Length: 314
Ligand code: C5P
Image (cartoon, rainbow, N blue to C red):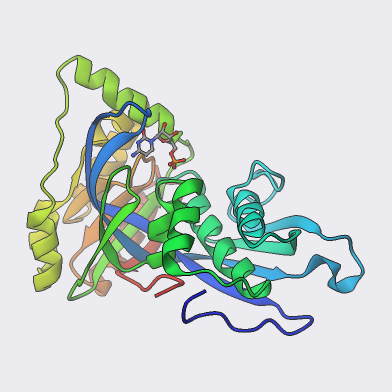
């Protein structure tokens, strides 16, 4: 793996931290022939992360294969078998390398599950990197990107982190040099929204003439490049999926209103939701805002985060 393969000693344990993503701009076009929607998005990695740890399963006398354990968010409810994207990632890179998979993966999850923050994609990206290091797989960035894209639209960005424009179905990335740090309050809810369901709702609303394709990412990209204030950024946040997420989970509207009443500069649904992001002026404002949103109730959990942060392969 270009520039980052550390040889794995016997008994080695490889740990990779992978941040969550948000989409300060999420423009959703029409469904393509392959069922995916054309996207014009700006991704940003934020300071909530999962940690993927990998060691050889055969090391302590076990059979080779893929074993997954999970702690933190989603432990006890998320699958640990082939249905977990991290399992698919380990299998895929073993296939690429032409070897039998032999790994015990531990996912320590801090990224809220199914919340529009790409937690599952982050675990898949971390697994690709951790297994490549553990098994000493020679793989270039382009190939790693190709494997990541095969796992999911957000996985390539999760490998990279930072800030990037995403086109195609999200996997065609152009890095953006953001100058500055922006502070968020991340409020999760006790419901989940499946990504395909939210895209279907976007299509349904469009048939009724509701919603449009915000394809122009230039204004927000320029704002990140010049280090715009949070006030300026608040006016530039766009999510074409927001109406669909609120239509599926109407309680999001009151959570968003509540945060604005408590002084957030903007309320922004994260990806396909149902997590809501509140933009704060600075870290002090974010701490106070988080406390007020917590006290108000309505959110399942409230976290502080800032972005952009580097990704695991930065
Ligand atoms: O790529 P990923 O596996 O994350 O996508 C999950 C689902 O979300 C897809 O099967 C598709 O229904 C929907 N999707 C979409 N357009 C995109 C990305 C995802 O319609 N650009």
